[in-house]
Amino acid sequence: MRLTHDTFYEKVLEKKNLFWILNISGWLILTLLWIALYFPDDFKKGEYGFLIFKYFNSNFIIPFIITTGVRYLFKRVSRKNYTLLKISGVIIISSLIASFLWFYIDILSTIIIFGDNLYSLFSIPVMKTVQKIINMSVLMSLWGVLYFIINIFFDWQEEKRSKERALLLATEARLEVLKNQINPHFLFNSLNTISALIEENQTKAQIVIDELSGFLRYTLTIKSSQKIKLRDEINFIKHYIKIQSVRFEEKLECIFDIAKDTEELCIPPAILYPIVENAIKHGINTSDFPLKLYVYSFIKKDVDDSFILGVKNSGLWINTSDTGKGTNTGINNVKERLFCEYHGDAGFNIIIKPGFVDVQISLPLQEKNAVRVQGNSCG
Image (cartoon, rainbow, N blue to C red; front, side, top):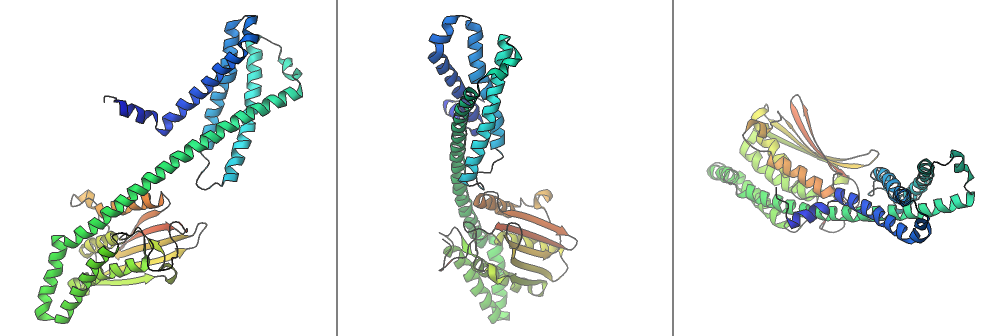
């Protein structure tokens, strides 16, 4: 692949590449500055080769190796969960340890290079040792602060991109709901049911018309919503279930078990619809009649409290991508939306046991993700 001007800079500015570029260039510039500042005093003594190697060893090679190791420690620090105080503590402690290593490795390598006696290591004045270690720890602390600032910037950029992608996927999901509504199969089946019932049972026909109207109306109400209350999502699902219940009659039985303390929690709109649709579509072909469908929610008390949404149906799980009769687009869309909305903090599990399939969504019970809200909208 030909590397263009734009792709070259994109590669350079990638997080993993930028670290090596900045770390190498930073310590190299410091070394050159150090040589320039101390050239008059040291280099007039001669032995340029040894002195240049010493400066590069002390100010470039050793700190570069140490900071590369510190980087792997910092990567284990969760910037999302750690407070500013904890991050500051990590920087200070790691800087002191790194400075001790830097100082004594530098002394030992100098002794080896110049052939000094090992006992000269213990002849260095204590105050001089302390002063050098403090100077080194200040430099290491500045390196640590810069490392976290750059990574926080990258995290912010990633979060921004994730939100933009989540918004795009949410829009696509709404369009998918609209598409499903005007999908010839869905509308044909619904209108066919209405047509058959007009002569046979006008009351039922009116029910289907009302439910179809509510189903279509919901897509307009969520047009500008990023999150909706669970009770509104359940009402939407009930419209869909009612239409299918009239269509399949005694072949479909649905039970809602929604915990009271979850009704006001906020979720992405139409997040349950593809799961319910999938459960009916495949369950009706693999389950004994009636197909039993359970839609439930509860708060799971654990180390980290979570909000569980589930759709359970009798029958078998069918992976349509394996059979070649589908692509699991709806399920994959749900997974992708959850990942982007909650940045990996949400869970999606498919529990398959003899006779039933249980699809569970786990959402973090946090104010920023799932909160009790006042008023009519989650925003």
